[in-house]
Length: 300
Picture (cartoon, helix red, strand yellow):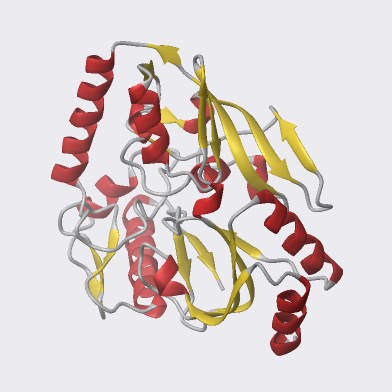
């Protein structure tokens, strides 16, 4: 793949786009890990996205789409391809009655705050989840008993042919949606909430925020929960029972505060993180017969 040619072609055809060469992906990942992307495109509008996507289709290039990068782990070799980043220009939030339309680049915290301002209840669980609506919808993000599937009733997206569509058929499951299996790009989500008492909503957000701060290693780079919840039991409890808190390879470590998190202690590499994850999987399988499945999305 001739990346110089691809870079020139996109730059000439779409001069308004911000396009970077050899962009370090650790700058776009909450884990602060990963090599460089050969081509990194910043998208600030649906029009830019449609233009870039059409051009990439013509060149038969399937890009990697990222938002806030809060659930990705990029390999040390980087990404030998094109990364499309949904930027701040696609972070609009519109409230109408008890419904909210949030563009893909809006953070879940900002949407939850918008709900609070309008005294809308039902999104308190998402206030502390890092990441964007687009990424959250793709993996059906959730916490403390709530998931986006409980409140998202329609998704706006661009299919692989470049058509902009809306669907109620998201096929949500635990940490999964249909969009993980398609080449479509999530543009935004329609969220249905209900009227509540602003003080009660704020109190619940504060309670969950304090719970997160007291139990999770929020002061260290990570991708949140490293492993999905298994069919029986809880990943963090299993890891803890195996005595793996503090397990370290290089600068990657199983958090001593929360066993469900692998954290970057300074300058961890992908290889460090992967080694820790594999050791955890091996020990949990040996002890419980359960193979933990990564929740973090490995790319590159």
